[in-house]
Length: 351
Image (cartoon, rainbow, N blue to C red; front, top):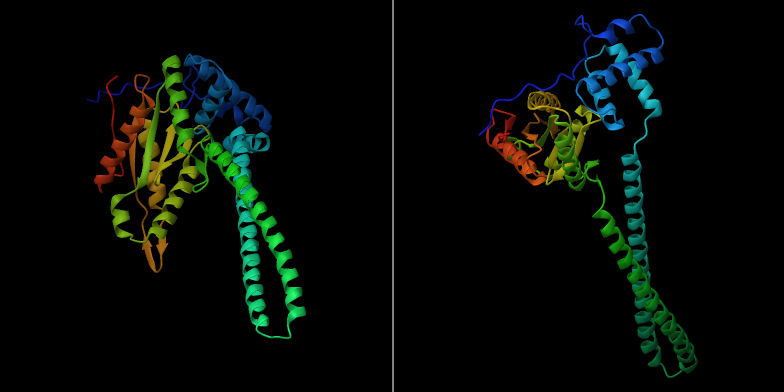
């Protein structure tokens, strides 16, 4: 049974003793973006210390993003512009490496295909030569021509043997490369089809978050998202469903924050791990996402279709395993999936 939710720490804004948000009051008196960032960074640090969290790079980055949501548009633009200038991401470098590797494998596969075509053409040429030899042999005055053809046939036979060996070696190299790529795919973090993280990466992140929650006692949530049941029934075209699913993936990236993990769980089901986000905030995130999806209408031929998703929400609990958390999120999504009147559903464990 679910129990009443405890009020989470307020990381939406840090206030001074007078109840005013310091950064907004001070930032209006400065024109230098560097000063604004310095003041804001101090506020982030104070917020971390207030919540008894160590000011590690990851925690600082997380709070840096969260607190920024409630700041003025001017301050957000200033800070975002600075972040864009210096932003580096190791995961992006890994993703680019994965893409390069897979593209290389595609090239190797193409080489094998071309080589196989060459071998087929050589085999065809050998058959044509044998046929012409048979036709000429019927002519009594063709001894010299037959001699030349026999010599050519012998040369082609040698070339055919060489090509067979080379094709065999090339296939062996291809199989070896395929095995390497398969092993790499088992360690990849990126889903090529939807341009987001994959299931493996998601499960690792959830497991890490469980450990962090055990240590620092904060709240985090996870949501599962899929196209609604009613929409799938309405659209029979598999190609259209695929295009709509990719649209949802793009919208997830658009609405997510840098600290969120957006991943493809599998079979068109997506997930967002919301770090330092309690259930109330997760519900708000789900509502924003549902509204964003509904406002992104999809055109199929001459018909306009309103996109709809079903969203399952569950907390990431330190007392649960990764599998239990994922199963709860999927069950919640299935509940929403069956209810056309609600875009999301909750499953909460006792704690």
